[in-house]
Image (cartoon, rainbow, N blue to C red):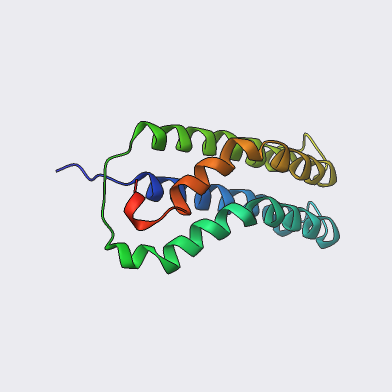
Length: 142
């Protein structure tokens, strides 16, 4: 029997994995002695700033509501597929900016600035989907 996951579960996984990946990149620069803490901290702050609204809502849902929903699994709907694709696209922009610093194509300061510019500029791609899947009531479950 093939496991089925809800769009919420897949979206949460996308966001958590991408956040962990993005945060690991400046930390890698620190551990490999390619950047000082003074340049790494602003990068971590920028990542926190752009991810906080989305991950905050997702985690609040799972810690507050998910346990009361009984962990019901449903197949992914077309709206869920679109939300996953848009979330992946937004995350590729952010993780890509961090990766450019790790690969040496951009200084960490410029990568940080790009993250701060791109995240909010493309928030309209993901905010409606995150709100739809994580801020709606139990009766409107996807």
